[in-house]
Image (cartoon, rainbow over the protein chains, first blue to last red):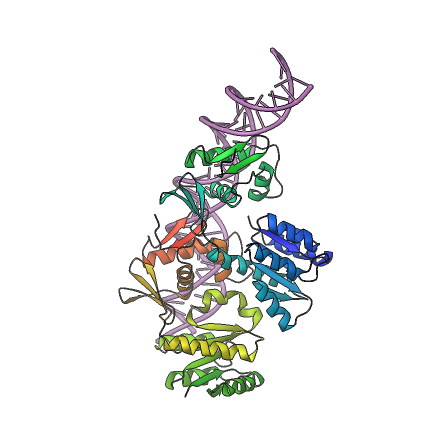
Length: 223
Length: 223
DNA sequence: AGAAACGCTGACAACGCGCTCAGCAAACGG
DNA sequence: CCGTTTGCTGAGCGCGTTGTCAGCGTTTCT
């Protein structure tokens, strides 16, 4: 499940981007305000960001600069009404990964986002320690215990990978559901609990901790 | 003295390329016809080639393919128009050394040509080990087992080349489809699986590994 | 203490995924 | 102009995967 943050104040363009990206299989979140976009990019995990430069409250370039300073390294595609070369250069220098000039075709944005994510998949540190002697490798999409790969089904891996990216944070069930399943999902289902149980049976019972009434946590045993 | 062959049918672009490259200190030869370009590249020595894809009489890709088959291994920079090539370049670029998408800045072409010549002087290898005693040569566009070339169809080679470039990373089927086929791919087709099956029959069953529900991987058995 | 909410488990049936085979259209080559 | 190669499609099959459901233990609240 790939999540995209779209920071765009023009509602019409935003809606069209959302439609195109959703049709391409992405989960899309829209923010029309620079500060809001900055905050979400700072606190949540996105696989890529579509960032308009002319945002209210906080300029797009500033948003990007702040993210990079904070160590956030998700791929960012910049949208700009002005297509000057120096603008482009400045954007790239600040840490943008690609650049599209308005007006643009929706398919072009989709194609470039795909390319960025693909490229990032090869670069992002592919190993995450998740405790209990377990290491999650995002390139090979597998979990190993002291070098030995554990057999995980796709859905099981996705759950573990998502928790690993949120290590140390309590993740509500509803959030897991939204990331693992399509939007239309029955809420009175216990599929997440079943899934967690299955993962525990494979990796050991004490890795994923239950915070009753709140959600699940991985690692960082802070009582 | 560095000689550059420019194969470009658009006279205006050709002239601008010639001016820029000449200003950079290269000796430039221009051909506007695919067959002529092929012939000159076959019989004369050039330090690099700028090759447009939309050539009359003989397609640019065919020209390149013929050169490589004949053992000509000078660096080739491909010029491609956005719509037709763009998306597929990454998967098919395997025969070329670099590519630039139209419209482009002249300085960019000059810079890349310089880079190509420098790289070629260092004789950077174009061979990729893919395990099982197999070697993929991107210049010759062929796969060899202990020196003996294996007969692969173009599509089979493209699949293997793409996986080879992503060696050690699980590549989802959808990503393969996007690189091998046109944008309007049918989602309910099993063409990739059929293709993988055929490649396996040629190179051996254990080279390409299936990660059910995830995709395919090449090499790097981090078991 | 009783009731309700929450989470875990085992069983099960349906579905999805990947593979093979056969067929056919288009491109290629003599 | 005809045979061969190439590559896409569809049907069928086996099996792993996954959501659902019922039941039960535990926690929480009144």
